Image 1 (cartoon, rainbow, N blue to C red):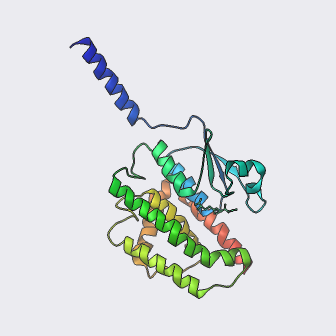
Image 2 (cartoon, protein in one colour; image 1 turned 45 degrees about the horizontal axis):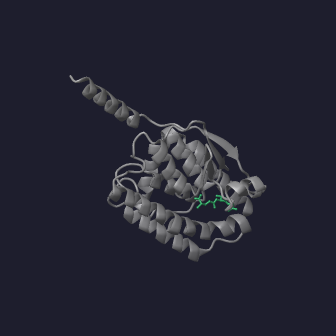
Image 3 (tube, rainbow, N blue to C red; image 1 turned 180 degrees about the vertical axis):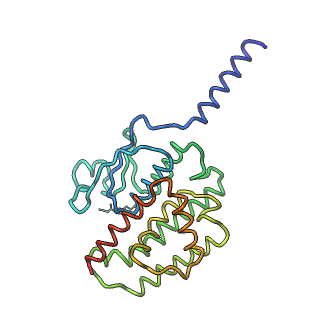
Amino acid sequence: MDKSIAAKIQKENTAVARSKRKRMPSEPIKFYYLAPSPPCRAVMMAARALDLELDLIPTNIMDGDHKTPEYLKMNPQHTIPTMDDSGFILWESRAILAYLVNAYGKDDSLYPKNPRQRAIVDQRLNFDIGTLFPRYSNLYFPMLFRGDEYNQENADKLNEALGWLNIFLEKSAFVAGDNLTIADISIIVTITNLDAFKFDFSEHENLTKWFERTKKALEPYDWEDIDETGAQMLADFLKREH
Ligand SMILES: N[C@@H](CCC(=O)N[C@@H](CS)C(=O)NCC(=O)O)C(=O)O
């Protein structure tokens, strides 16, 4: 074979092998978090699923760790989670989830590249941040942080959102298709909280089955340690408030 053709084939093969190889961060990603925080829990589970090491930096928002000049310089919005991947700083848990899969996933199964499949994952993530989580927080934040009573109107609104999620799950095993994606990981933290708070969502059968299925899918990634333990901390806090 012509030497230049052989060299070209060799170069192409090496490039393919490299592109298939899993990329890893040059140093552990710094992760500013607090164990009970639902969005922090979602990112921690995804990092486990991606086999990524996080340099965990506890950031106690009750003590104001998120309002120090250093933290505000990094994230002026003073939210956790925030990550620092060798100087690349990002907050908003769903953006972090997408970044980690894009940057370090050995395949795209958690966040498919196919435009229509990805659009469904994005739709579910937008449903989560724009509808499900706000309805959860409208009910539980006043109870958690002000000691308010249970508000039935807000509970009905939350239940309506759970009904929509139940409909999404009529035709698929996971919230955005037939396999686990970052949308499941983002949504499960709210459902785990509801379970820990004893909010009854058993009327939503697809949702109940999905919850069991997703917990099982996340079992190899320390689901219980991260998600259940964090939700239980919040449930204990809720009990103390009432
Ligand atoms: N949409 C954001 C929400 C982040 C958020 O509000 N985190 C809470 C803790 S769970 C927080 O940082 N609260 C303190 C603050 O906003 O000052 C995400 O998903 O990352």
